[in-house]
Length: 57
Image (cartoon, rainbow, N blue to C red):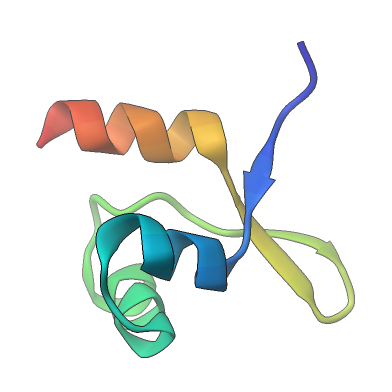
């Protein structure tokens, strides 16, 4: 099964927070999944990593 990726906008909608909050979590929370740089200017999070993080909460 291919990996699915989510943008910061999609994550913000998923968690009902702002895009800035997603980036703050990425910067400040060690338990928040790391983003992947798919190309220049294209940063995404693996859906499987996000789902695992949600399950651990």
